[in-house]
Image (cartoon, rainbow, N blue to C red; front, side, top):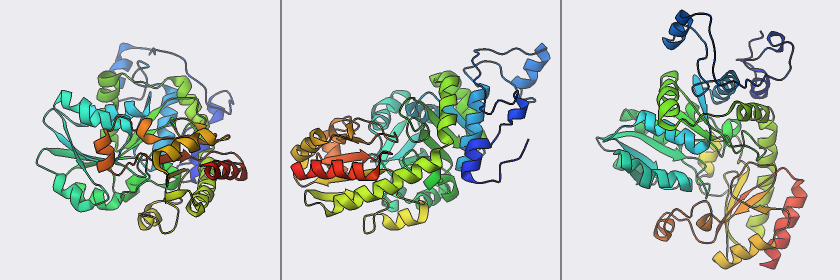
Length: 396
């Protein structure tokens, strides 16, 4: 089989780890629909259990379709190994439950996905783990939040929903100096635009529901990093803490999705930059947040760690909440929906949708205004996206 490990991103996303001539010439990798596996002897099972041989025992732990996806995602992120899960939240939960224990603390950025925020504020404490929040745009804030019980730091960049950026290298250096793990959610940027491990992170998470799957028709998650960490997450977090195994069919769909990931993310980014420029010039718009837009906060960080701005744009209207709701109801092409990374353009109001789990006080404290909107720019003809937004803004 040809060794694709040193080839380009798109080549690895399409070919890595699979030789059609070893599978009856089937160009697409087969979908393995089985719950259990047999071996030719009990000793063979012993060797698999002890790690002396490769093989499969039961579908909750691993499946060949999943294994191929894990190998490709690890390669695309520059990691030693990967594990896939049934959702992005399953990836987060499996990671935290595997690497933290009662009495530990984790320092978390104050801006994260709403359901993850609920896990940190309400879920982990039930198991004796304390989440300490800090402003990760200020490295000194992170350093001050680290205590003797801290075991890891956790953040998203770009962050959901306002797309603020965190300097991965700076935070990773602080964590490494204290012997802590750095865990980064790379869902918004994808490995096409950003690879956190190259900037010092230890573990990278994805909601593969979004850009990796890319078609709005599946739920999946992924974790990549050093083999020792991934083995722990698979054997503890996945096998018995959550049991949130990704179905082989969904793994097959994500494998199909990542074949076009590079092309899709490039198109999303190109269109999103055009949208950001339109929003910046429109009189109804108070502020625009986009990593690829010159002059915005964090532009220097984006230049260092992202290849492009990505497919998401956040913005505030001068009319606040009322204007935002009016805009959502005035759009014809963009759909009101949570999630992102789909071919369709999606728009949502974080305060009442993805981040409703934040209290009004927390949203105000962390700068998530009632008028903030998040737009996931799709793959439609860019001029049609722009025209739809303009007519909606003109009516606000």
